Length: 123
Image 1: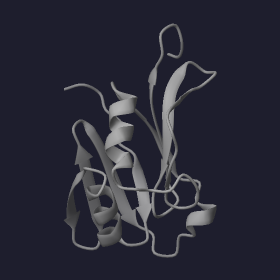
Image 2 (image 1 turned 30 degrees about the horizontal axis):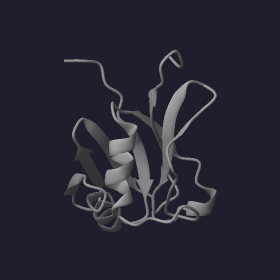
Image 3 (image 1 turned 90 degrees about the horizontal axis):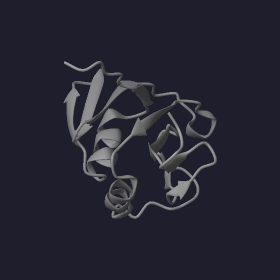
């Protein structure tokens, strides 16, 4: 097995979080009202209940490295998320730190940056 880190993020409602991520092409499995795991290919996210979370002040997040940033963005874009507010989906762009990336903010304010190293940049 390859070493792996899996983000654990908050959810005000595991059912709503599951529906949101399934709308992005993930499949989910909920473990009662205690835990949620969603997967899309090799991407895996875990969620725990945090009913009192204020999405506007959330500082939760994760960085997901993928092989094809633009294809994943196109798949997420089919969900019709806005470019501002909560939730939101930003357009992919080349960053000064050598990554091509976009951002997804979910219903609970968790920021997922999704990217890949561009030729000659990043780690």
